[in-house]
Length: 195
Ligand code: G4P
Image 1 (cartoon, rainbow, N blue to C red):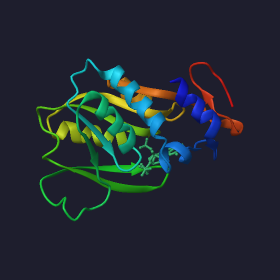
Image 2: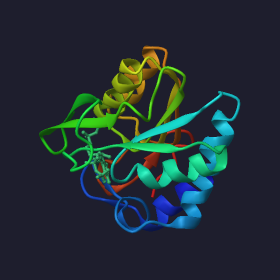
Image 3: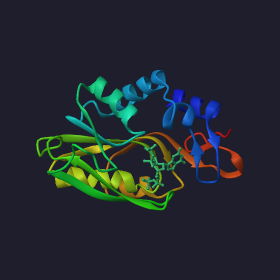
Image 4: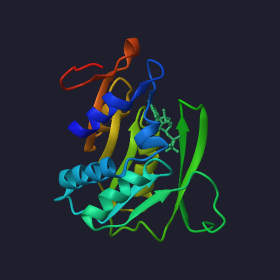
């Protein structure tokens, strides 16, 4: 997706060989115009998949999910990472280990919002080892719902999450795939362009 690559080139900051900082438009401040384009792109890729719900994980997955939901005309549900005052019973839960942060979160959603009648599109901001996406997929299966696929804003192709899900037969649509962050440069997979 051209506009997203352009934004990464303009504003992305390579923090290390494995971490790209994109706080100016995705993880802290949000660019609503870009987010709308992202929603349109996910919606067009999945428009014939019969999606009835979008499922994501708080917090950075919410903006792209909402924009996609707006375009597809379906609700976006976000799994919570922390206990909520109101989210107390009838939950689906899954454990998600973050290698980056070296912590495990129990993510949960109310059983009210995903049911066996749903066809679910899982969306997240980053795909690294795929732990978050796999936790969300686990919840889709616990609910007996149908998984349409996974939409990712930025996939780090040098980490294993994308390939391992594709090998399992899951449809993974990433708007950009980063091949490497070596030498302080972003190299995208398709064109092998660097910044
Ligand atoms: P995984 O789910 O694919 O296994 O990823 P991992 O555990 O490595 O990632 C944990 C958190 O770090 C996630 O955010 C993920 O989106 C984010 N992350 C992973 N790699 C990068 C990166 O290169 N750049 C940035 N900016 N983020 C990365 P989170 O803890 O859920 O945060 P948030 O959604 O509350 O913002």
